[in-house]
Image 1 (cartoon, helix red, strand yellow):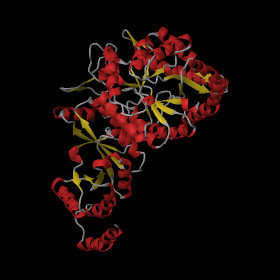
Image 2 (cartoon, chains in turn cyan, blue):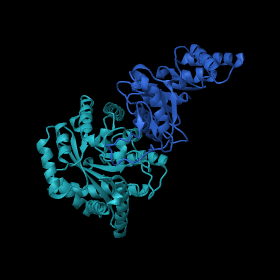
Image 3 (cartoon, rainbow over the protein chains, first blue to last red):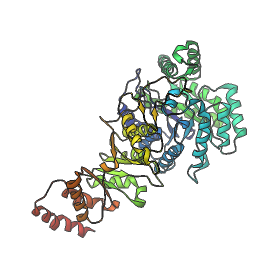
Image 4 (spheres, chains in turn purple, blue):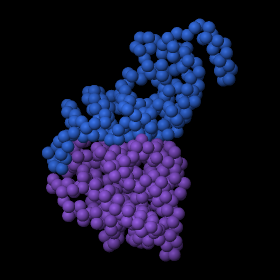
Length: 320
Length: 231
C-alpha cells in the first residue's frame, strides 16, 4: 500500500499564522524528502502559486530538484503546476531535465489555476485558460520523454467534465480534489475510466491529520479553517467580489473542507480512505503538510501515515 | 581572479561529476549550460548544488523568448534551492536578440524584493487586461525573495570564457583578460579530468599581479613535475 500513498503539500509558505525562514523551508524540503523516502512512501508533492505575500513557491520543479538530489527512490509530484501560465516548451524542458537528473522520478500534475492576478501579471487572459490548457497540454505530452513509461505521463487535476475528458483524451492520469466524495466520486471515476484509452491512473487528495487526542484534533481543524479562510478569502473571486466579501459562500466552502478533512485516530482515517479505494481510486495523495504544521509535527504525521494508517489499508485490501 | 569549470560536449550531461571535480580542485564555481539531455540549466543548478558544498553554481539562461517573469521566478526559486549559491548568466535566446535587453531589465526589476510595475515595448507587468476583471493590482511582488541579499544576475560578458588546453596558455589568457578588461571571474571550458590541473597550476598563477620568478620555478621543479609524473 505504501507505494500508492504520496504526501503533500509542500508550498514553501511563510504565512502570518506560521512565520518561517524561507531559506530554512527550502533546506527542510530535502530533509523531509529523506524522511518520506525512508518510510517507504511513494512520493512527495509540491504546489505552485505566484506573487503572494507568503512566498508560495512559483517553480516547484526547481525546488524539488534539490530534494531529488538528496534522495534515491522517492518520486516528486506537483499538485498542481498551473500549465496555462507557463511556456509549454520551457516547462517540458524543465520536466525533462528533472526526469533525467532524478532517474525518472517525476509525477507532473497540471491544473488550471484560478487567480486573475496570476494570469494578468503574465499578460494572459484568465477567461482563455481552458484553451491555453488544451494547447499547452498537447505540446507537453508531445514533448514527453520518448520511451517513458506510460504510467509516468502527467496527471490532470480537477473534477469538471472538461478536465476528465481532457485527461482521458491525452492519456493522462486524473487527480481529484479532496472535496469529491460519495456517489459523485464513484461516477467521476467511472466516467474517466470509460473515456480513457491509456493507463488511466486515478488519484485523490485528502487533508489528513492523525491524532488520538481530541484536543489536538480540534486545534488542527481550527488551524485548517483559518488557513483556508485566508486562501479562499483572498483568492477566490466571483463577479468582482473576493471571498472575504462573500461571507456565505466562504462559510459554505470552509464547512465542506472541514467535512472532507480526515482528522482523528489512525483507524478512523483508514476507514474514511476506504471510500475512494472502493470507488476505484488507486493513488492517495494525503495532505499532511500545511504552513501551520510545525517541522517536528510534520515528521510525526509522515510516520503516522506510513506506520499506522497504511497497514490498515493494506489489511482491508487483502481481506476484501 | 575566481574560476569556474565549464564542462563541454558530452560532459555537460554529467554536471555532478563536473561540480565535484571543480570543488575538489579548489575552484570557485561550475558553469552549467543547456544540452539535449538537460535542457533547463536552472533545474540542473538546483540539483547540482545539493551534491556539493560551497561551490557557486552558475547557470546560463536564455532571455528574450518566453515571459521574463517566469524566468525570474525560476531563478529566485533555484536561488533558494541552492541556498543562495546561484549565479544566473543571461544570454540572448536565438532569434530573440531584439527582446533581450528588455527581458534582462524585466528580470532584474522582478528579482528585487519589492512590488513593481514594468512597461516595456514587448512586456507589461501587470498587463492590466480588461478581461481579467478580478485582477486589481497595479504593482506585483515576485516571490520567493533571493536567498542572500541580492540575486546574482550577470550578463554573459561578466563571466568570460577561456577554452583550456595547455595550462601556460590558459594562464596567459587569464592574465591578459585581467590586465586589459579587468576580469574578476572567468569560466574555463575544459574536460572534467583537467579540473585538478586548473586548481593546482592555473589558479595559483592568476591571483596576484605578479609572482617572483623563484616561486614559479619552485612550483615547476616540485609540484608540476610531480603532477606530470602522476599522469
